[in-house]
Image (cartoon, rainbow, N blue to C red; front, side):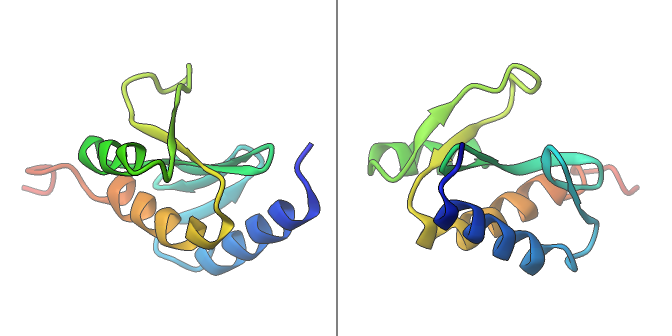
Length: 105
């Protein structure tokens, strides 16, 4: 069970992002255009980021890799530092919410 500080930070994050284009708050986490991009797991934020960004954050020991069976091909990372959550959630939102290249033509 998440501690109160993590719960409060998650609630603040959902309030902050729920008005962004295409974002919905669901029981499983934050979705953009029906795709999960962030969720709370115990006291950590789990986000989907590009592979190069995941490699960078892991190499600097800011995050650790997280395996999500429902989405095994995506780069999920676990971040415990609450101060980094807004930045990384926004990155995940932008990354997951982008339309595929060539998908608009």
